[in-house]
Amino acid sequence: MQIVGFGLTVAMGVVEEKSSRVVELLLSTIRPLDLLWGKVLGIGAVGLVQLLAYGVVGIVTGLATGLLTITGTAVGVFGAALLAGSCSATPSSPSSTPPPGRWCRARRTSAPRPGR
Image 1 (tube, one colour):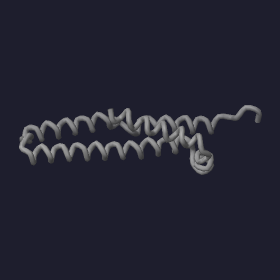
Image 2 (cartoon, one colour):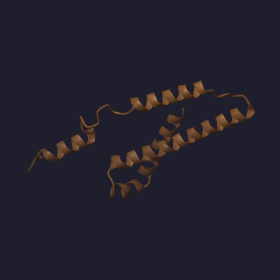
Image 3 (cartoon, helix red, strand yellow):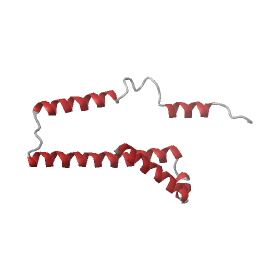
């Protein structure tokens, strides 16, 4: 639910920039893909911090009221799941292939341009 909400925030930000002339000024200094990545990463980081804050408040409240008991097994299972998720998100061999953007950019600049 939160991912959809922050995705909509990114979309509304893009539409807002297009309706005003702010995007023209921004695109004169940076590439469009850099602008989009900055927007996605920035709003994504805010979303993760907000989700973390909700979780911390919920756990502290549950522990303070006695409605929640955290055992060593629960902490271990959560840590293993977190570790497994972070390991599956990393590439197995990062040096084997270049990122798609760099490969396309390098290929595009080395190809002769039509009409020259």
